[in-house]
Length: 262
Image (cartoon, rainbow, N blue to C red):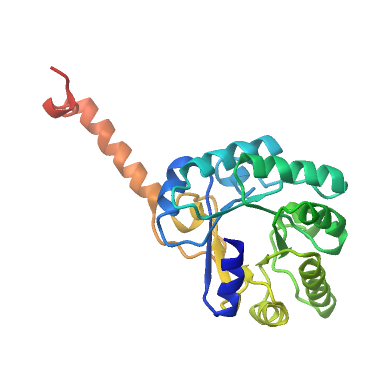
């Protein structure tokens, strides 16, 4: 599966990644022409109600990875985020946590950062576990950035992102997510790398795109980033359905004969 993702860059075929957090949506998405399912730590915000991703635990990621694995009937490449403080400081701990996600059903893991986490990345890859990188706006560093802001607005930060992407590539990762950076920066990095880039708020020149499913389906309504396109409004559809159900129960219209056992 990973070799196919690498070949897609060579063929200049766009890669489609989408986040997925549970069994029923995994069944839907794995039959819907996507290339990668990402069990993102964004589940902390869109599924668990946390204010950010920092409170997401390994237990959370393992539980949701198992659920998505069970629903992945299309056998799509399944990547799971390693949560905050599960890999940053200790390569041995990083490897053990990566193994837990693989045991839960992931085909690969995703980590945020560059040079500062490279020893952990190498430890995981040396144990034959595939790794996806993540640069630009890295949500686990939201406090450091002072909020969810566009990154790489100056030469120094652009240089660091480019250097980090090459360091990660040399370590053996097979793809990099680029988040919230100017389109030209993403284009330049994409052209420098032999591995695919997958953009989220990084413009059209990346080798692929990823969106948070609850954003693009209109299920998470607290806020909508500029880079999101809403392809549905499921929150409103669900609200309308529940209102109709409630009205029919109160009026006696539901249940009808077809909903009743004799």
